[in-house]
Length: 407
Ligand code: HEM
Image (cartoon, rainbow, N blue to C red; front, side, top):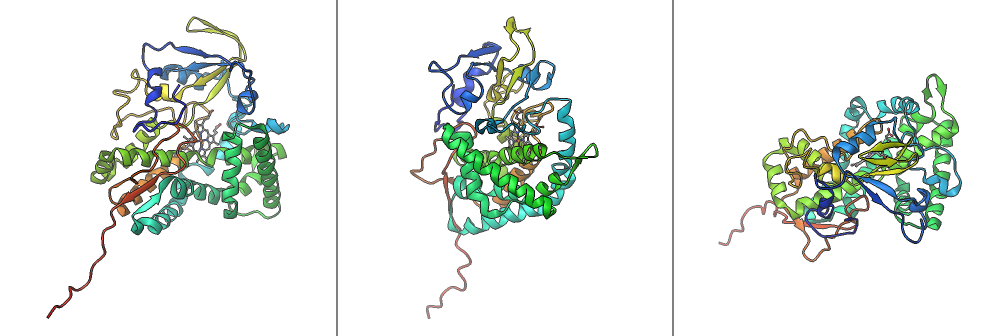
């Protein structure tokens, strides 16, 4: 189903066959023949799942909280016997709303406006380091680092934990080994619990401190709520923007007319960011049925699992004209990359802002760029994305000074 790395300009092209009116509304993805195996498949019970392919149906799964639940989502911690919930993602309405209201001010426009200067300072400092060199590994040395620096600053995490965080996250999400997952989970949860205790004793003006000293409906948070929130923010905020950035630059390097258009029309950056997000849906989310019911002539059973196939939704011709074309002026562009409904990504505005500021500052400093000749451009169409992507550009020679006097 297109989940293998490829080197196409549009790496989501192999998913193409799953969008459109000829595709069945629900497809059943059977469990693997050898049983659930280790890691994530085992966590979900390995029963197989329904693939939801059309925009309209995906929208229903996310917004119909009577039939579809997200209870227990992203609870990787169960692998090591932890029982706390991942908050807010794994909590259903109506309980979900209180956590969302609690966190919202930290991700809303007023807070983000105050972060604008810091985001711009990080971007410009980082770009200035390599602008004159004519070369950067935009995935490893830039995309991987920039959003994580912003996120760690927002949370108040010590910068020295940077590499360790990314290693833990890799082992939890991508190692597909119980052993590695377990070790990483133990490491990160021990760190986060200690960090929470530290902030309880010595508050500062960052987000973890605000969470541990916060109140919901006038009550202080329980220990389970504190770790549930801090843990899920850690998981959700770490490498999602990084994957998006690497893919965005890969696309621009391979399709240089996108660069030309953005240079000629910087006012299109905002809508271009939406189109990058639409055409690069790094996550597909799941839900489970809360009860037995019939849908599209099929009998759904309570507990059945549904995978909402974001590329299907984002490339659905019933929703988007000419869906496979990158059109940076597309409007409206209500894609599913941040999903819909109550669990709509809490960090969406922050992610958008990071991407917009990045493009804004990048085009002021870096001329037309391309992939370094000989570099591997294969990419995984999803969160794993691309590990290394060397880009090159021609460096303009500075003012050569006064011409030499030969006489
Ligand atoms: C381009 C970057 C990002 C993408 C594509 C993305 C995608 C998503 C998606 C698809 C969901 C819904 C998952 C589901 O319902 O199953 C989600 C939820 C969430 N995301 Fe993001 N995310 C991004 C960046 C961020 C950042 C930077 C943060 C935090 C700093 C963040 C925090 C969250 C939180 C807290 C939720 C749960 C919201 C809720 O349950 O109410 N995300 N994100």
